[in-house]
Amino acid sequence: MARRTALDLTTGPIAGRVLQLARPAILSTLVHNLYGLNDVFFSQYVGVAGQTAVSNNLCVMIAVFGVIQLAAIGTLTLVARRTGAGNEVGAAQAAKQGLFFAVALSLVAVVVGWVTSAHIPRFMGMAPDVEAESILYLRVLFSGLPALFLFPTVESIFRARGDARTPLLLQIVAVGTNILGNAAAVFWLDAGVAGIAGATILSRVVGVALGITLLRAGTLGLDLSRGTGPLAQLGVWRRIAMVSAPVAARTLLFGVIYQVVSRITAQFGTAAQNGLGVGIRIEGLCFFILLGFGFAASPMVGQNLGAGRPERAARAAWTAVGMAMVPSLFFTVFFGFWPELFLSRFAQDAATIAHGTDYLRIVAVCFVFLNLEVVLAHAFVGAGDTWPPMLVDVPLTAVQDGE
Image (cartoon, rainbow, N blue to C red; front, side):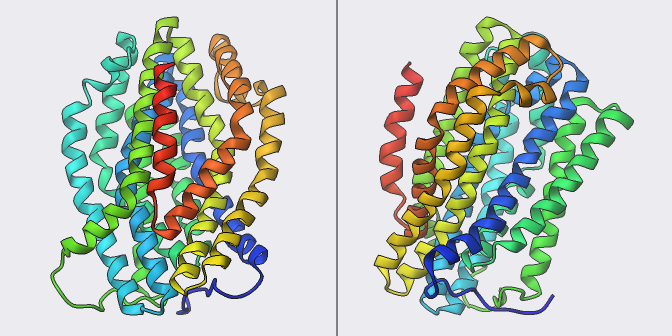
C-alpha cells in the first residue's frame, strides 16, 4: 500500500468533507454491528439459555467498552489535534503511547474480569442454566481482552488522520473472520457459547494484526519509531485518560444500567430477558449509523481547532447532526411499525420475539434525540472537551436507573 499523509480537513466544503468521512465510517460501524447480530443469530442454535447468555452479556461488554474508550477516545483526540497543528512527531508519539496504554489497561481488565465473571450473571438475576452459560461465555471473552482493547485504538489512529477507509477494511476482515468462526464453532465443533466467544477474540486478533501492520508500513505518514523518551510515557497516558474519562464513564454507566434493567427483566422469565438482549442488539443498527456520523465529526472538529478555525469546527459538528437526522427518522418509523421483521430473523422462540418487538417499538421514539446525543458527544471528543456530554448524560442515565 502506498505511503500517504493525513487528509486535510481544514479546507474544502464542510458538507463534502463530512460525507467523505461519514460514508466509510457508517459502513464500518454497520459492519461492526454485525458482530453482535451474527453472535445472536448463531446463538439461537445453542438453545434459549445459550442465546440469553450471549444477548444479555452485551451490557457487560458495553461496560467493558467504557474502559476500552479510556485509550481509544483520548488517542483520537491527541492525534487529530497534533495533526491539525502540523506536529507530525507529536502525532506519532500520541499514536504509539495510545497503543501501549490500551495494552496496559487490558491486562488489568483481564484480572478484574476473571475475578468478577462468576458474580455478574448472579447480579443480573439469570436462571441457573443461563448463569452457567454466561460464566463460560464471559471467561473466554475476558481472556481475549488485549485484542478487544487494541482494535478500537488502532481504528482511532486512522480516523484521527482523516482515514475512514482503513477502519472499514479492518472491520470487514474482522467480521468475516467472526462469522466463519461462529459457523465453525456452532455447526462443526459444537462448542456452544464458548466457541462464539472464541470467534469474537479471533476476529479482533486478526483485525489488530492487520491494522498494526499497516501502521508500521507508514500508510498514514506516521513513523511510530520517531520520538524520544521512555517506552511508557505516563504523562501522555494521563492526558489520553483525562480526555477519555467522561466518555468512558458514560459508557460504563450505560452498561451497568442495562445490567440492572436485565436483572429487573429476569423477574418476568428467560424469554423476556432474552427479548431485551436481542432487541438491544437490533437497536444497534440505528446507533451505529449515528456513531458513523460521530466518527466524521470528531476529526473534523479536532483538526480545525488544532488549526485555529473554531467556527468551521462548529459548523462541521452541526452539519453532521443534520445529515444524521435522516437515518434517525427512518428507524423511528421502521422500528415503530415493523419491528417483528427483524426479530423473527434472530430468534426462534415466539415469546422472545414478542418481548423484543415491544422493546423496539418503545425505543424507536428516542432515535431522533439519540442523534443529538451521539453525534454532538463525538464532536466534543474532537475538541478534547468531553465533560459537557457527561454532565448531561450521567444524570439522565441515573434517572433511567431510578425508574
